Structures are given as structure tokens and as C-alpha cells.
Image (tube, rainbow, N blue to C red; front, top):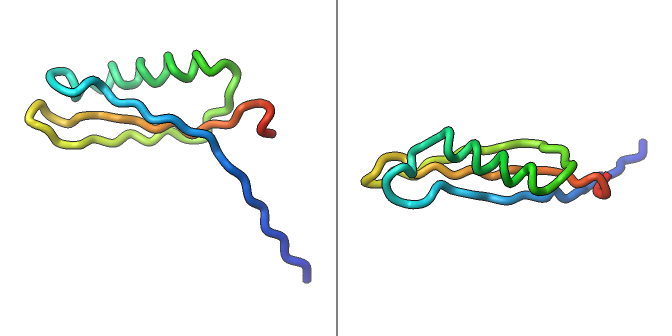
Length: 73
């Protein structure tokens, strides 16, 4: 039996809403992430992870986008 090990790297970026009032806005975070994805051009999004850190203004939302560029294929 032959065993092979495939490995690959995925690109990613993270963004958060500005700290302070409004940091809990999910629509603002999703718009921010979508604008950044659009700016990348043609990419294949593999996953989006949303996180929140509790602050005095509510949950401070952030997101990480994992993606592939066409030349990564």
C-alpha cells in the first residue's frame, strides 16, 4: 500500500470593526469583509470565521476569511 501526504497553504486575512461604539455591528463587519473580498478580485473563499470579544460596548466583532487565488490551483 502506498501512502501519500498532500499539503497546501491557504491564504487568509482578518478584519474587525473599529473599537468603541458600533463595534458590535454584524452588518458593518460583513460589509467590511465583503468589500475586502471584492478588492482581491477572483478568489475562491474556503471559509469565513466570525469571532467576538466582549467589551464595555458589547461584542467587538472580527472575521477571518480563508481563500485561494486562481494561481494557487
